[in-house]
Length: 388
Image (tube, rainbow, N blue to C red; front, side):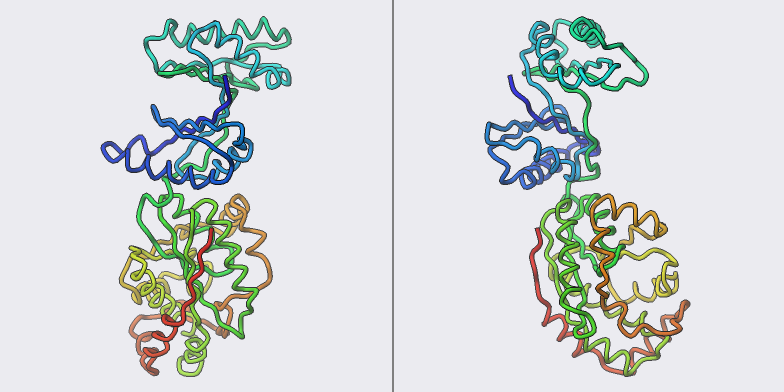
């Protein structure tokens, strides 16, 4: 008898004939997450993946890592026993001795997917519950709010016993719903936006605009640190560092000050669009939230969208700052994001930015200078860094 990890997945079960494709991607992501933790094997059956490791396998660290794999809704450490009631009773007492010794109330649930088993689910529940009450005299049954729920699962080849499960990351397996390029700064918003799209199965690429000497090398390293955290959830991320100084200086020298931010963001979208197409991405991702800053009004967003020819996903569009902060704390990017290293979006910030720009006036302002060569140079000078 031995301990394994049972992983349950959610939305994948609704995928019909395409379900095996999503299961294969999830299995690949699990293997990536558990890499270097020792020897293990994965088996799939009945909407569950069983992780079975040998004596080299670090099961404690595995549980921690698996909580960050998208597509998994619950994680349980379970004891594997023979499918007979005598073995299940003895194993329940042995495996749950420490857990049940620390609580006063419990209940038993049973799931019998093997309908050939000798007892029904209610019968298993009553039998194991009674046996545990005899073994642990201090315990009482509480069917409504027990401190511990003992679960007995009767499957095709074995029985499993566990005491509760941990919540998984949910969502869809990363890489199962196409590719998109994330425009990432060093702030709170864009890493959260990337996390949220990765949770929906999107494979992430990242584009960061770097403006030395106005932004420091440490600001670039901050972005790479943020992507390292996000990559724990999303898998590997290719980050493209775009030299943006000359474009910003040209905008400042040739365009109206009140339109500087909008024009700057339009050029970011144009460059990101080119990089995204080169990487076979189908969309861009930004961390914009409606009305959060002057450029993130409906009119401003319409002007920036007009600069690219692919969809722009904005998963934070209806969130307030506190909601974004909560997610950043949850995923571990908050403390990095608040480090005081400014990004290029703060360079040459206009004193009075226009909040309701009109596209024809913005395009007219851009035409005052031929930015074509500078845009081409920025794309050609992009540095690619692999994260994760």
